[in-house]
Length: 208
View (tube, rainbow, N blue to C red):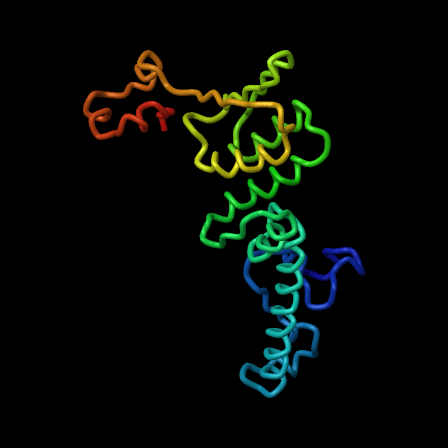
């Protein structure tokens, strides 16, 4: 950092202007705070400051890592605590992003059950736009996954949560979106490409 390039007091000791986060521990250059005659490669002061810098970097990284666990979107090893708090099944073998969706859906599925709450909860699980059709006279509603092709992979977990938050006398069903043959033509899918795909892959093919 060049002299005068940042406002005094903004940066902490041993922190560079560009060092405001990251996924790896950052080791600061503490020798730059000392007079030139201490900056001898392999010298006693260089060794001492190098050891201190490693500890400072690890401490800062650890603090940031702990802070990440307080937010579902950035939590990693702390996802299990969120799941325990929300009475969800703790399964570390599941992908982290899938666990985050389940946690977010449970957080959104609290309070009075409304159409918007159902939409937010379903969207959190599927990762796409969702429409909810209500039929009050028939005591049922339909969840239509319009932003996702096929059946969401974690539908079973969503159904468990849905059964917990919906009124017991209200039933529900799902509607899924699939690709039709006419749409496949727009993707310029050849017969050779189609032969290498399963029927389910064809029904959910989005042209990627």
